[in-house]
Image (cartoon, rainbow, N blue to C red):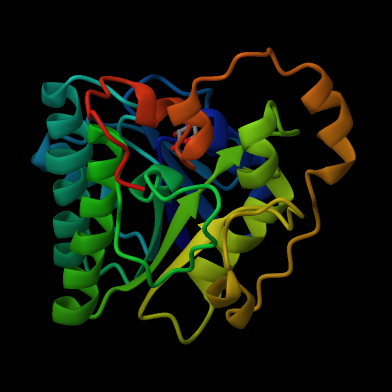
Length: 267
Ligand code: 15L
């Protein structure tokens, strides 16, 4: 990998990867729709709105691998999801194909499977159960990645990211937290592992309270260093009482509750 592109480089994960991947590859091309801090050595800065195909083609030019974090990172009205996470996503994959890009690490989400109950341990083989329009767009990204892997031979690591941060922020996040160094490790596996064709893994640390069987990530050599457990006592003590029963039941939490109108739970 000579030149690696990070889309959504101005977001929380993107700005962290900008630091942790600095010097790992000869050139990091950092792109976002918003202006980014000026390039340092080994960096290129780009400003692209991914719903604009011509701009996306320029963004991916001469790139060997992509970490696609761009798009909308939470629930939003359909027109927003459509432009950012469906049209924009398609543009990135299609422009990457035309440009001969070999690898893409796709930031999908726990919300692609958020309607699985917390009592169930799920692996990379389960069918999607999105908890939001956002979750549907992430399930779509996994499908589109599968198509571009099978039909065009691009290698994809689809990382269903839990919650990224320096520490877990609430009870639900104790089960899905991922630390910066663990996510960096997974991204590097996605870009560098010689065998990747199409894989789904969970982007979580080695959390004792995990809801995931992440054996597919283990198989690819992922050895997470962090666990949310040392934070658990403080996190649980700070948790406000009276959580919504739907949020508590499902892995996606409040994403499941928003706009929820079902009379009975499907489980
Ligand atoms: C996500 O997919 C979002 O991008 C992030 O902002 C958080 O909401 C996270 O999931 C989560 O579930 O905590």
